Image (cartoon, rainbow over all chains, first blue to last red; front, side, top):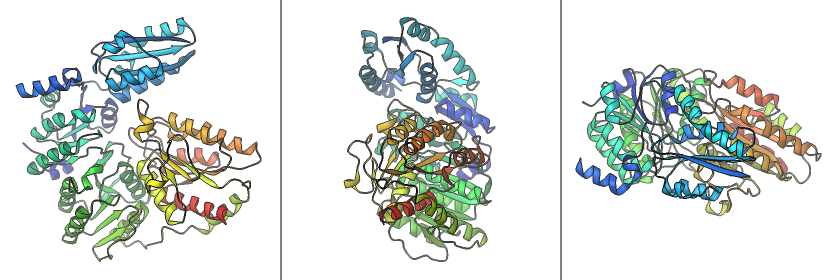
Length: 57
Length: 515
């Protein structure tokens, strides 16, 4: 279910941080709930394999 | 010199984390150069240029970590490489507690998430951002180099769901006082702002805070949103959201001059908006007539002045003219130069500051060379070599390939200041400093030695170097605006809390030198 922009403005921020850990640390320091995703390139970054995987899914 | 390297298969780390590791490795005594990179094709070319080659490097993939060390002795290189895992584990230990590897797992752990923040290589952004939108989350995309057609597809998808996609290439947002990306500690208030540039939003929100007012929300749209190709999908959603937001009384929009169709639609949109608004098209040479509800500004300072006026009726002082005190300081300064000193060298971390400063200097009759010039004929052929009056944006990819952005680490700016210090015709060294979340812990401290060294090299020749700096930040930032300002003043640097004011100050000195 979508969260309206007004809800985003008014509710507590709850963040999923995909990438730079530093961003999650700084959000954490502001007492924002944050889940860190230690992302890495899917299929070792091989674009052909990624396309194949996407097709399968 | 001894060269060595090691590879960790299937250990992926983000670029900022790796740059932190790189810095720590290079601080080891006896180490002359280090490289800490993931094994992408581009990075492998970089490694080869530095002198790291081998079959294992050639075979490494994008998920493999490559660490190379050049040192004075074999034992130095061996020790540094042997201690690598200890260092990696110690650094990971300092970061957040609960880590996942897939967006889906993070969402399962925190199902009431309302915002995804994405900072991964641009070519992979679409699939992650789409997952977030499909899960009903708003998205902040820091990554650049996302193909324009993918940006458009994401934003059209979000529009159907009434979700915000801030970015790609979005540096800054403030949601109800909370900073996302490179933002500052700014109090909550009644001014809502939308901006296509991160440093533009930082400058505006800090000036509002430092003037005693506050920000309801600051929405970054990303650089391309204001182009006619994207057509301002995020910008219009943000305007409507701020219009509906009970805490926002005035809406401000800041960007470089946008696409003409978008600009026309935005102005029409604001004309029907129930709240007063300010459109700041940075450096715009002409603006439509001011109306009672919609004001136009061409610098961030003008936008701040209009916002204050609309909120509480503050007077509208001109932001261009210098004070008597500033003019006296300039009188005292210009007599110290030697006859051949006549040029300005700007070494900047912020792209918007590079642009705005050039616009202001140009408006005062000073043409400026740059790696990001206003006119093609003023483009620096070699971005490492300044010409006459030059301002370089050192956040540009030319300088940051494999090296930290100058907002995070001052090393590349330090090297450039030292190099410019050898140029005897320089009269003014012009700098910007940006404080806030995710920025360097001590932006001024990192450059003080280099500034001192440049000043000294003029002094020993019987000349004088004027150093002018702007600081974008607040006293609530962890770096502390007051402390950073004092460090600069102690070094006899002229400090302004506005890039625009600093640029006018420089322009006046250059005018005197030209007379």
